[in-house]
Length: 98
Length: 252
Image 1: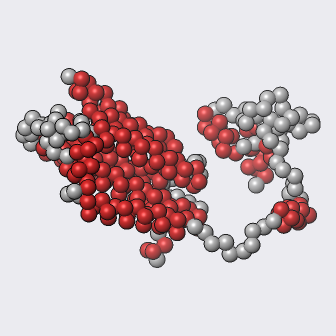
Image 2: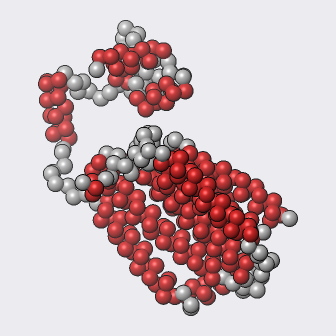
Image 3: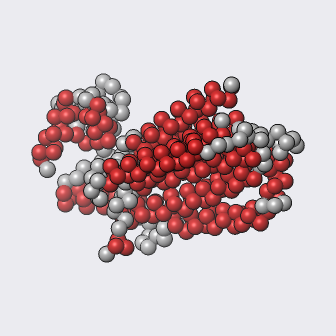
């Protein structure tokens, strides 16, 4: 079964990666990043069972904490950008280019 | 046997939901799809002897993170759908090619590896999953645990600083607002009264029914533009409302 879980994890990770590249709405891009983090967590949990120790689960737990912190900051940044530019599209926030 | 049935059902559900997350036009649908993926992953954790992580996944992800996403979606505007204009030519195509290639690479790599039968967590979990995890977190990983507490405090502070807005002018009072409304009325003839609610003078009081003026015509002020747009997409927009909106478009 380990192989199945890992392939599922890889598939979800790839789908999330495509989403990050394809979507323009910053919030949806963020959701795709969350999907990729979740896929990694699945791999960690699977490896924990494969190796018979709980380190993988501990790491997955820490990943969840970091992801929660990241979502909070990221969404706050999106709200701040939306407030000044009236848009949540990643294409509009290109002022640093000029 | 039971595990593989669970796995196949949830694998199909989660992959379809993940595809829906990437390819649905409306951001709220994407959020709901993400919720489906997270719930099915929680069940997969539970199947793999990780009941604590399954609970945390449901509480933290489907509870807190999804709520935050939906909250910000409502704040930023639900109808802010994606623009279909590509800023980099061919980006979509190449992104999908890259994704397929990456999935194939990882999938084949994993598929070709010879993986022994899993050792299982029966020994590691013999004192219960939560006590065993707690032992690891508070002994070997205690430094990382302390650092995460600092991280969480920093994140909370950072969110407050980023979302806080300093008010540069005094808050307008009710008197100021009323005065501004009548100044607007005197200059541009804008209606100073509140907008008529939908369906105010009509026979229905549903939100998508326009208010009728005394002569029986539709009051364009009462038409909710977001709902009208959705109805026009679905083809259920009432003809008189469509006519009013069209006249208004031409008037501009």
